[in-house]
Image (cartoon, rainbow, N blue to C red):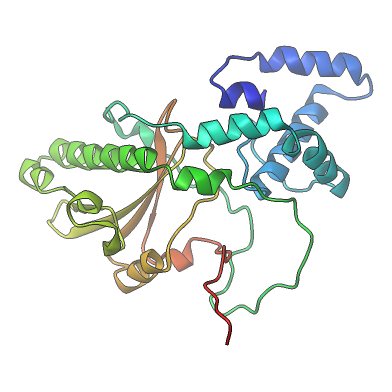
Length: 263
C-alpha cells in the first residue's frame, strides 16, 4: 500500500485488509487496523512516510520495529519510491477557495523537550532514513507551499474587506532571501503585521519537519506576530494547521546534528 501511495498508484485498502483477515483467522478487522496504525508509528519515528488514513498509534512492540526494519525499511523498492516522492518537483497548487483548508493541529506525539533539558541517554531507535530531510531540501515544493500561503493570505484579507492590505502581502523568502526568520509578510485586519513561516510536506499531517535556530529565535523575539503554517498532503489535497507565538511552547525539539571541530 505504501509503495503504491508513494508512486501515485491506486490501491484498495479494504480489499487488502480482507485478504489479511483470511490469512490471519484469529485477527479481527479492528485488530488489523490497529496493527497498521502501529506500523505507521514505527515509520513516523524513523522519519518515513506512512499510509494515509492509518494515524500513528505509538504503543508498539520491539518485535514490530525489527519486522518493519527488515521487511520494509530494508526494501530497495520502498527506498526508491520514498526517495522519488521526497524529491519529486512540485508545481503550484490550486489557489485556496475557502477556509476548509485550515485544520486543527495534530495531538502531541511525544513529550515536549524543555529548553534546558539535559541530553537524553543513548537508546536504540528504529534506524532513520533521510526522506523528510530530502523533502525539506526540495526547493520547488517549498516555494510552491510558500506561494500557496501568499495566495491564501491575499484571499483571507480580500474576503474580510481589506484589499489594500492584501496587495501588500509579500513573499519575503523570494524578495529578501531566507535569513529573515519567516517566509511571508502578511497582516491582521487591523493592520498589524503577521510574520508567517511555511513548512510544506506532501506527506501526512503528523510528519516531523525541520526548523532552524534562527526561525525559533524569531518566533520567541516576535511572538506577538509570529505564525507557523504547516502545509501537508500538498500534492493531493493541500491543508494546513497554524501555530501562533513562541514555537518553543508548541513543538518538541530534537537535535538533528551539531557543528563540530577538534579543540
